[in-house]
Amino acid sequence: MMYEQKAVHRLYRKLVNLYPSGFKERLAESMQQTFQDLWNEKRQTKKELFGFVLWTFIETAIGIFREYLLLISPGDVMQTILKTSGSSALISFLLTLPFMIMEVVNRRIFNEDFPVMLFFVMWLNLFAIGLILLPIMRGRRTGNHDMANPIPTQKNTLLTNPRSAAMISIALILAPGILPLLNSVGWLSLDRLFNGPNPEVAYLPGQLMSLGLILFPIAAGIIAGRPIVSALRAGGSLFAHPINLIIVVVISFLFVSGVVSLIVDQWPCFIGVPNCD
Amino acid sequence: MTTTISTPPLTPAVFHILLALSSGERHGYGIMKQVEADSQGKVTMGPGTLYGSLKRMLDAGLVKESDKRVDPEMDDERRIYYQLTGMGAEALAAELARYQRIVTIAQQRKLFPKTFAYDV
Image 1 (cartoon, rainbow over the protein chains, first blue to last red):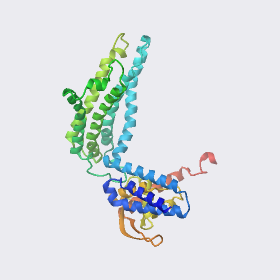
Image 2 (cartoon, rainbow over the protein chains, first blue to last red):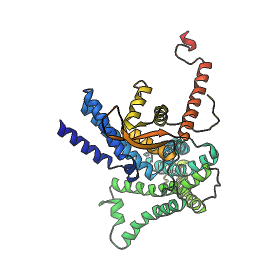
Image 3 (cartoon, rainbow over the protein chains, first blue to last red):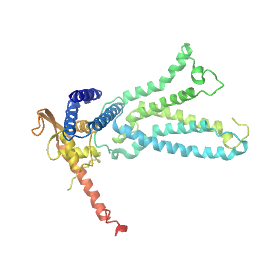
């Protein structure tokens, strides 16, 4: 029993050591003490120790995960992203829906497969625009009134500092550029990477990688826009961080261009022109 | 209770911790037990939630640490105690005032159990 207690406490100490350093230095000792107190209480009341240990370990592990998330991105950013993604997904779907209806109605006589990928890409572009621009629009609308977080968020994180946010965004935009570079020096075959060993057959990993690459500019736009949202919420100007604004505008423009070019390219198909592609 | 302080709503964990500390300073385990008692056992806070909330409350100046000392009712281990700050007390008062306003509205609309129109 004593050995078991020591082993569990050692494990809990190791678990608590996984907290970010600032948290660990300040609260790790108290956490271990509290765990010891809870252990003693359960033992004295002869309650089930396994259930308690399991619950506490899981609960603490979730706490560690949460602290790291908050470290990467302050709490209100996470909430904003979650709130924005739902609205963006819905608005994007509603904007894509008329074209889907046109496709179904005008092409029903041709007995063709429904181009799921085309509409998914269209939806994804609109979704990306929403993810980047909606928080800024909300920030402008709410101004000083959207201060619902009771605890001030961590300041001067990499993502809240306009300069570092802009640099991270630029790095994210440029990151996919490494692929053509590796391809040009012969270290990587882009064709094989995206089309697989047999180009005639659909290659799922390649398609997933293509979709994954779209996430880079989306993340870049969200990160660049974050200091703008903060400034707007604090009652500041939209132009408070001009470099971040330029990055947001450029990325949004790219996604808007993507949607417009898709619509222009596919317009004949939408209106029912035979043999369109 | 009236207050002119305009603070946003608190999370349930922060509210319960502030409420637990309103009757005096406590160590982590003491806060847990007080939260459990205040909520008639309905709210059970694990160490991850408690210390995560405490960290943010310390950063926000709602609570502060006291000196380490032994709890006479427990073993001879020295524990860090936490206590409310002035800002913490104000935040708690503002939250309670908010609750009171909601309760008043609910009373006016006869929303308490067995006061619904269809219960009569």
